Image (cartoon, rainbow, N blue to C red; front, side, top):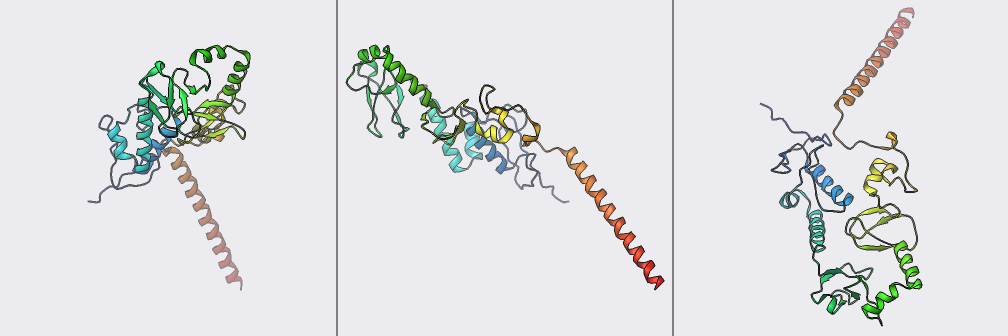
Length: 267
C-alpha cells in the first residue's frame, strides 16, 4: 500500500513529517517552512508577542514551548527577547535608557528619592521621575517649573513631532529626514505618519494605512495577493482551460497532417 504524503494547506507543497502546532488546537497540516514564516510575520506585525495558530479562523495562541519547538534558533531568540521586554515593561521601577543608540534598561530601586539613573551599558544619565534624559543643572522641582514655560513647551512640541515609539518594542525613534517608511532595530517596519504595519501594507495594499494617513488609498482587490488557503475551484478551472487548449492544438496538428497527405496524393 502506497503511503500518502501530506500536503501543506498553505503552500500546497508535500512534506514528510506532520507538524503538530499546538496540543490545544491540534492542527497539523502545515509544513515547517510556512509555520516559521507565520511566526516571523506575527512578530513583525504586532506590538505584542502573542503568536496565534496560522490556520484560518483559529484563535489558539501558541505556547512558549510551541514557539521554541517550531521556530528557527534566530527567530526564537528574537521572540524570547521581545517576550522579556514585554514582561519588564510591567515592572514599576524599570526604565529604558534614553540614549538613542543604546536600547538597554535597568531597575532603579531608589525611585523619586534619588532620581538620577546611570545606564549600566552606556553610562548615559536619565531621570527616573520624568522618564527623560537627565536635566543637568536642574532639580526635578525646577524641571517641573520649566515644563510650564513657553520655550520648553516649544521644545517639547518639536520633540513630539520628531520622536515616536516603535509599535512593536516601544523604543523611541527619532526621524531627522528621509521617507516615512521606518525600520526599527527590533526588525519591525512601520509608517511614520500613521504607525501602520508595513508587512500588511506590502502584502495587502495602501488601505492598511490609517484612513487619515496621506498614503492611504481605498481598497483595490487587484493590489492584494491572497496568502490564505489555496482555492481548489480556481485550480480546477485553470486545469480545464489548459486541457481545452491542448485539445485545440491536437486538432490543428491533425488538420495539418490531413492537408499534407492530400498534397502527396496529388503529386
